[in-house]
Length: 405
Ligand code: GLY
Image 1 (spheres, helix red, strand yellow):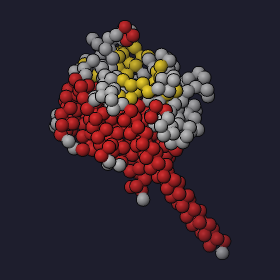
Image 2 (cartoon, protein in one colour):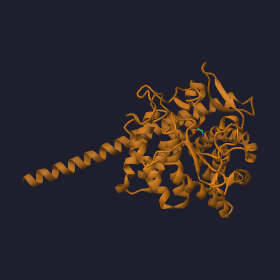
Image 3 (cartoon, rainbow, N blue to C red):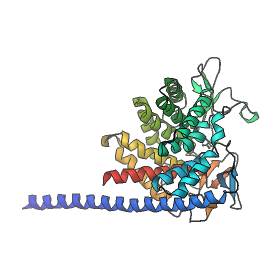
Image 4 (cartoon, helix red, strand yellow):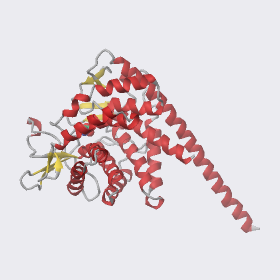
């Protein structure tokens, strides 16, 4: 009799547990769909607001709450076109396609950029998504040209792509490489496959390997800037530019690192990259200063925590990366931990605390990101890249939830 009661209890608990998870996922699905709908309406307002300024792209807002735009040469130029392509992929309407093409073409001249590493961000978030979604070959050639431009910044002695050129503010570094630079490697990996030419992936993997060797501390946290000696290829300095201090863990830097090695594992299947991504994910998710809503402070070592500003852009990048990473590891290896953290982040970012009301926030989707705290610029504002990785995360989560049901 007792055995039967225990059995009934176990079956009931399992049944209730499954039902609870199903309900949770149904609720999340609703949040994802509502957020994509809101993002679409908000982004169309943004697109229309710049219809008479055909060379401008959304960047942030100023202290008065007015839209700040940039030209194609600023590193964030490709993100808004990318947002429009993701939203078009979700809901293929004529107006989304019209604006996605319109804003993508605004960035095309950057395919010739050779004076910084951001050409990958600019061209692959815009033209990369355009090609992935439409298959139109005119976009493919733009990406090829941009990859050739990026390749000019590779120095074989150092084994990395140079991030910043020599400027008065960067004069203290011989050959600065920033952790963000990993993100540009996706375009090279794509070009290697699309044009059957290993020279692009050789450079990407050299950069990723050298960064893995030199950019990380034992706890898998990352430096922001590592500068190399151009004669010996050895590390010259380890510093920060956008973080709190040289030895701190700048939140967006950790986000780029996580996303970068997850993406490099997807592209190459190399186990070292997966191990690195998992180490970084565990550093972030187990960090004692990660807030309960999982939206990081702008630097994990900011001295004024818990009053420090949050960085929604870091959360969006981490969230998108964790969804992908959860697919690459088994249940024993934290797959559900990564996915659960990503779900928590989507819930937080989609709450009124971070997601703006329609027609507010300069027509950006998310509030509360930090661009460059040490310079005092873009502090606690919307940023086009926060929106890009948030929308990407929504799309990834939508696919993941549909695959489950
Ligand atoms: N790549 C520049 C930044 O993350 O702010």
